[in-house]
Length: 296
Image 1 (tube, rainbow, N blue to C red):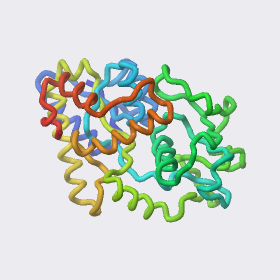
Image 2: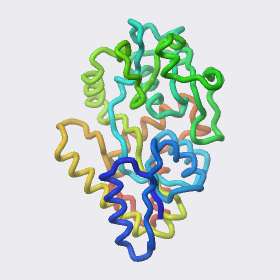
Image 3: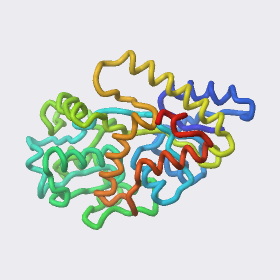
């Protein structure tokens, strides 16, 4: 069994759990980084039996009947308000009519940012010129007609620093340039306040398992779930009080994944709405366990 997990501690927990299962002869941890480069192969059933995956990619895969299942474990949880950036002295109120660059329309960070711009700040998303730089991981889903594609070979970071886009949505790839600033004032406080109000953190990556592996190796997958959940619980105990950054279990992840599905549908990323209970049912049925086994 091969898996793709970025976090070394969680990858170690997964490996130990899977290797201890008698029906699995070998376990391989993929070295591929950044991990999002493997999402397309995973949902296309070309590589990996278990993978972390961006929430929006998972939702698109389910909506397009791909053979992947949601495992309610957080692989990457973080606040997002700091990811709307600019080199100019611009505010959220300046967004209409301006150009905002984002790596891909389906990038989960961008989906969260657009979601709270619409809900929290009242921004009409269609009043903004959105520019993308690459396609998403699910080839069946194209960008909406009101989103433009940057010229081939363009770089989002370079376009931001050279003034060809007014804003950008960038997380770990944020340019290390002293001119770059977060557009939302005091974004850390704003993000914490928003999380307290809605009751969840905008989780980026969760775990998924290929449907065939879930049906054939359900016990092993559940064993792996337990091992990773134990590590996430330990981190929660060590972390700051408030809304957990890394929730696990169907019940704990319901608010964040439900909100992401709502935003994805509103932003024309899905061919149909995806309900959270559908994700729960698909996973539970394939594993042959009640939903309560995975924290429902």
